[in-house]
Length: 291
Image (tube, rainbow, N blue to C red; front, side, top):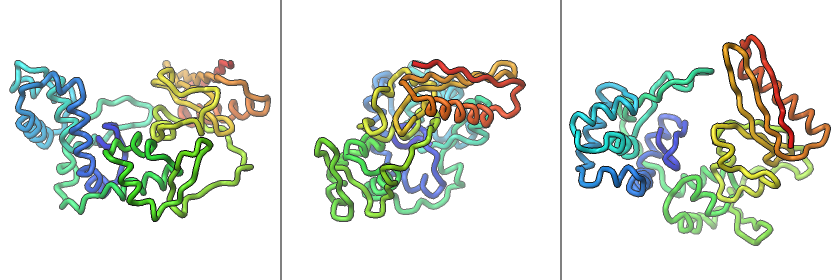
């Protein structure tokens, strides 16, 4: 499902029907500012989008297959850009099987209406509702955090409208952080266990300011195609799993100094992760590269 930030999000059928119309303007703006838009200048995009939707309704297809189909009708134009116009502008679903454990599969698309058998569309969600749902998951948060996660326009006006029903905190710099009244806080003395996170986890992507979970280690391009992990609540390093002929290796890149007890906790958690990810591996190996 192409949703927030023009990336894939897993949602229920009911949420897909309610959220997708709200995000259409954002996706149109995202496409207009993308390199693909420049490469289809002068093309009747409405015609391309309608044809792409028709093709995907007839039979689910990968992006590569959609490129080939559209190229036969617009041979003088960039086929990749035409296919991405459909991906951005048509409400799509990645059909099953997808995300199969331990296997890589090409995403195959159909339209949201086809997948849900043209269920009647309910009342679309409002920006206010989306912001409240974000705060329930990620608050307290600033308006910049909300904008980073959702790409909604004019987030400040939405938050100001909601302000009477929100709790407002201040961070060390005096910046306002907003939350729902029943937001849950743990006691400050509660130990934060080691946690291994997947690639592109929302704990990073859902905030403009990540300083609350970063100290000496910074989440940057070096984490591309790698998972991350936190120690004592702060980003501590990256991890990557490789599997060759049944031999699974979990490589842990520990990028900050960790105490003896903390190091043992990282090792124990990594070993459990490796066993969880590759329970049937012929052999499993853990490597830790420490700072």
